[in-house]
Image (cartoon, rainbow, N blue to C red; front, side, top):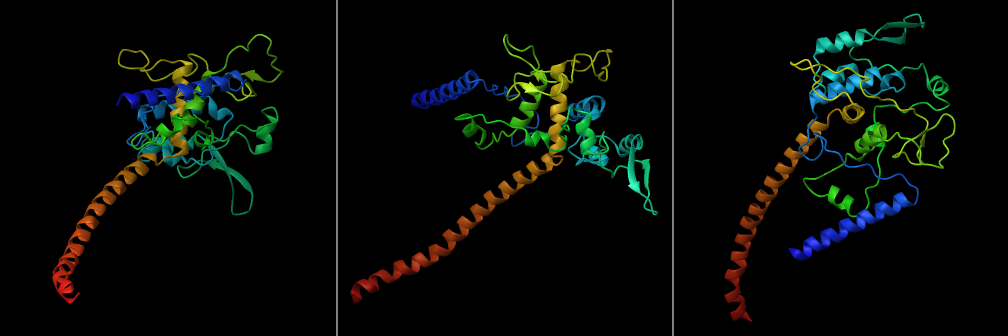
Length: 297
């Protein structure tokens, strides 16, 4: 046990030294690992957090970022923010979507629950023109697309059974939203760029999107916000919402995977019992023939 602890400590020290060396070379440091309710084999989304994250997206992020793979009706599906069908219908009616009528003319109509979340721009070129020449990335799968390497030996720990940590993308988004700061002395930041500690290269075109008190959350019974209205909390909530948007059926997948594992364990036990039963009879017959084979020899 002592040797194991020493080895684990040595591996951890090696991982930390490699991370420090990476930061010393001018690369962005790895984001800190956060605690997420949906992490791990048995993780589930926090509905209240998803609702707050959706509020942050709608009031702040939706002004620039599309979310084309998410339908309004997804907000009312199991494992999501927990909106009712009536709430989703009313929400969708607040937006307009374009479609072709029977005469082939482009017309606008109120959105329906089956419609995709509307983009803030008519097309990608318009989005790029309004954002310094580059269209903001779509929110639909951003939590899966953005990630980083935790390095050895942490990636081994992440892959261990009953750990299954794959939330590096959410960690990165949360850190990025909190990583805006003044550049170090001697660092030149060109016009249209912003310094971010966790962005690779440190120069990011997106201006700091969140500030304390920017979004007003629902109040509790005492009239105070249930959670702090701070950049850290906003970024945490919207990151969780982005994780849900990238995988709305995460809870169903984990539940199915757990049932499959249980089935395979039971099946393995039954197959082992059948094998012992079948080969026990064959083994008895062979054992009974051994004296006769010995005499014949």
